[in-house]
Amino acid sequence: MTERLYYNDPYLTTFSAEVVDASEDGCTVFLDRTAFYPSSGGQPFDLGTLGGKAIAGVEEREDGRIAHLLASPLDGRFVQGVINWDRRHDHMQQHTGQHLLSAVLEELYSIPTLSFHMGVEASTIEIGAASLTPEQVAAVERRVHAVIWEGRPVQVTYEKASEAAGLRKVSEREGILRIVSIEGLDRSACGGTHVRSTSAIGALQVRKLDRIRGNVRLEFLCGARALHRARADFEALSTIARTFSSPIDQAAELVTALQARAADLDRSRRKLALELAGFQGRELYENTAPSPDGVRRAMSRFPSGAVSDETRALAQSFVSGERAVFVAASEDPPSVLLAASKDSGVHAGEVLKRALAAAGGRGGGNAQLAQGSLPSREALESLLPQLLG
Ligand SMILES: [Zn+2]
Image (cartoon, rainbow, N blue to C red; front, side, top):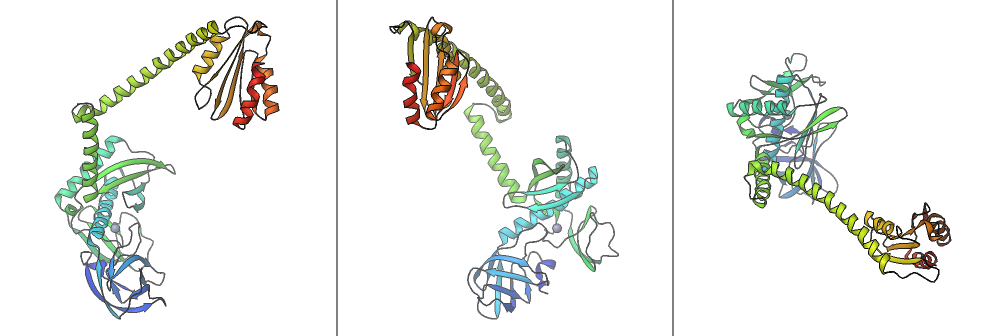
C-alpha cells in the first residue's frame, strides 16, 4: 500500500518519499508515500514532477499501490515530488462542486446522481431523472451558490462502513470509509481531493443537459472554468451584439428575427429564380432555330452539383413550346437531364434510359422529363450527341 498524502492534506504540493519499487526501465515508480492523485472516482490524475522528471500518468493498482509513470527513467532512492497545483486545484474545485451539485439535486428534487466524469473542458453527472426543467436548473444554481457563499466547511472523516449513517449514496465498500462532508448538507464516501470550504468552489455553472439512457446527463463548470467560460460567452455575445449594433440583452431576439427574415428572403429568392429560369427557357426557345425536321433542340451546361429546380424549370419552359427537345448536363458529378415536348416525337424517359444503359449510367423518367447519372465525364460526353440526334 502506498500512503496517500492527499487524503489528509489535498493542499500539499511538495513532498519527499522513498522509491520502494520500479520497473526495469525506471519509468514506472512506486513510492512509500505520495501526494500524486491517481485517476479514480471520475477525477483525473495529477501532473507535476518526481525527482525532476515529468509525470505522464498516475495509476491506482489492484494491490493498493500507486504507480507513477514517467516519460524518462528516474534514478536515486529518495526523491522530491512537486504537484502541478493549477491542475490539482482545478480538479478540487470541480470535484467539490460536484458533491454540492449532487447534494442540492437530492435536497430539492430527490434526484440521485448515478455517475460523475471530470473532463478536460467540462464535467458531467448522469442523474436518475428523465428530465430537468429550466426552472429546476435555475433553482439548483441558486441553492448551490447560496451554499458557496456561506463558506461551509468541507471535511474528511474516517468511519466504519457498518456504522456510517446518512450517506447520500450507499457505499459498497467495507471496512473504513473516507467520508467527505459539506457541513449540514452532504456526506459522501469518496477518495478524491476537495477544497476545504464551499466558498473555494468559487462558482458553478450548469451548461448543458443531454438525454442519455433515459436519464439526464448534466454538464457543469466550477471555479476558474466557470469564470473563463463566462468571459468567453460574454466576448462572443458582445461580438454578435456589435455586429447588429444592439444591446447584448436584445441580441438573441434579433438573431432569431433575422434568421426568420433570411428564410423568408430565401423562399422568395428561390421563387424568383424559378420564374427567371422560366423566362430564360422561353427566350432560349425563341432564339433557337428549328432543325430541318422542325424540332428545336438546345443544350445547356449547368454548374456542378445535382440537377437543380432552376435547371428543371428552364427545361420545362423550353419544351412548353411546340416541337422542342432540351438537354442539360453537368460534369461534376456527371449527370444529365432530357426534356421533350409532347409533339416532339421523342419519349424522354425511353431515349435517356437506352442511352444510359449503353454508357453505363443510371436513371429514367417520363415522356416529357428524364434524368440520369453517369460513371464518368467521358461517358457523359459520349452520350450527349445521342440525345440531341
Ligand atoms: Zn469526492
